[in-house]
Length: 478
Image 1 (cartoon, rainbow, N blue to C red):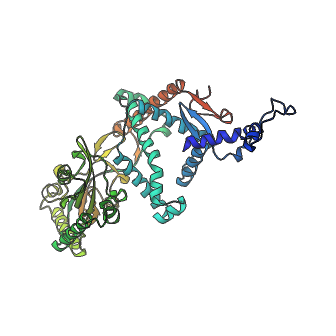
Image 2: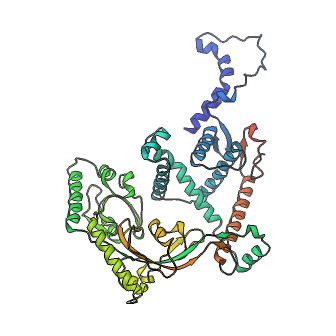
């Protein structure tokens, strides 16, 4: 489509001279040379405002269209993003840099899975929907259906993931030593020292409310009904998944994309990898997420792509109150010294992620690629953060409910193990924070140097009106 637009732009620019030179052929009359028209006469200049679209930059063999720049500007305005400097210069340069990374990613055979792309798009759409208030408002704002929005996002989001993976590869070998960290901050001005937000360490005990057997049977009967409808040819599995599945994959007709055994729930994986006929529907599978039926799409080596429908049994209000009362009783026993919170987490808690660690919560910090128990409030589950915010160190909370990492409603009590109030970083107490700052700086330098060198060896052409811009990187204008 972009090449067609570019061709139309070139034809429109050539149109006047082409028409004058071929008028005879178009009317069926022989062409007659007109000596009164000088041979050197130029076609009139077409005002920029009359051009629908045009190629404004070329990087390697990849064009950047004026419409692409305008689309990025509109998206940035909608999200409240501000560009440093003139957007007419900054946006094309950002797009040009992205094309450098994409070109190198292709050379290095870097890939991202369709599952990663779809999950990222869904997360972005959810953020947009929350921002505007509803899916209907988003569709009205964009002027197209949610399915069309998702389709239009696909290639750009996939490219953004490829760029991210390419950057990770470029900085994979970056490292810093304790001496590097000390030297960097030794002469740093006071007002430049990083500010560390409040951090907490939290222990948790969770228990799942009892689900009535009647509710489980209702869910299983519903899944059996879906299976019968697919087997009878009344509808497709994908249609039922879109309508009824309680998993994020419902938007894709239940399709998960190619995944390995380790990426799936063990019970789900066992059934999915044993499917052989794409026309058949699996038996009902119970996982940590709920109850599923599965349909095979394809297998590639040790990866499988399948559809599924997930239904989650509903917890009754009575069961919720019962589990909260039980957890409040456990909290009272802990406060009374009958046993410790840590023992309770080990022997009573249902939470598999924390019970073997005495209830200590942890998360994977993507910035420094490590597992840590020190949470900033924004990194905690919202329900936990609200409770912990007003607690004192050593205090055990009252029972509350939350949605766990498997999407299930559970009852919980927490203990605030430690709190470090917000403060300016010090080398002794916040070494990891300061190390991250130095690491980020080193990574930025590596990326910047790579881009600058890549520009030197890449064909770049731009329209004359962009040659007076002030760019972050030198060497674009050749």
